[in-house]
Length: 50
Image 1 (cartoon, rainbow, N blue to C red):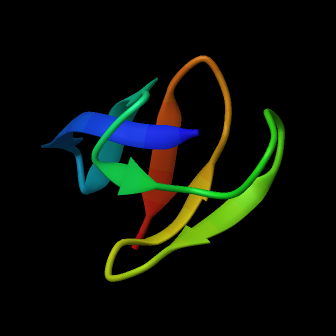
Image 2 (tube, rainbow, N blue to C red; image 1 turned 180 degrees about the vertical axis):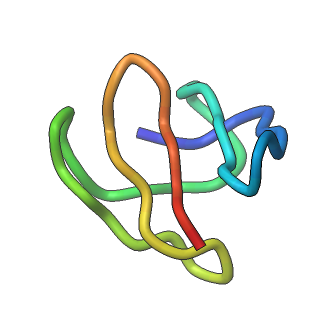
């Protein structure tokens, strides 16, 4: 799965999954690390906390 179109809100970052851009290894419900971005949570939306 890959991360697309992210924006920052209240110091958290929200993104959506699509078949391009940032490539991520993981499943829904996993916390995964994205290079240069930090840890994110796979869900309906992807969120990462700095």
